[in-house]
Length: 312
Ligand code: BDR
Image (cartoon, rainbow, N blue to C red):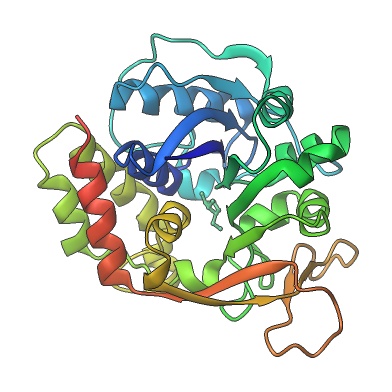
């Protein structure tokens, strides 16, 4: 199995991603969750991570608190989508375990340095603050990371928090900049692909019908968070962002993309956090990203439902 560290600010769609990975232990060995400030403040995202591990019965996985805010900017949150806890919807079990006292950035650095080169993958579902901080503190980790697969960015589908920026990049554009320039093996799952993965009533119904504890809980979470997007977009379902990362890792053939340059705007107030994707190779900038632009929603939901169905 691929050994992964998950960076996350759950967030119902990220809960779906975490459940998917825990439902596929032969593909993912989850070494730890690093809670990020993003959709909601760090205290809540940390608690939400613990709740998800309680729900899935995976209290053997450690949870670490990352940085409480982005590198330079005040935290912008998305309570309007995810609710005041960041993970509204069902009543999830109270966590009995507590977070590991080690800082999330230290956990990232120490895990990578203590492991053979090219054996640790970073799965980023959130703003990139903690990965960037780890790279700044210990630049030697970049050559040792197997790959980074991140839900971040938008180009063809433009923005979801401003007209031009995707939320995870907008929250901490400087962190995204550090990561984009680090010379990593980096794959991005931007809104361009997540906007094709719509949570239709039938697809959420399939989670609800799984007959376990996790499936119906996931359906209830997503019904809560999709309400905002359904009003906003007027589509038959809401984009389901987070699981695009593990789905891509499990089944790259159901996605398509290109190796291109992606650079992030950190100066302009108007377009802050915009990810300029050089899809047509217009510039000489280095190809730093595998940019996933399309995917098959039927296969995606099938895989996700299958994985969640394997949980308690
Ligand atoms: C991203 O923003 C957050 O609100 C979601 O959880 C996802 O990580 C999508 O732009």
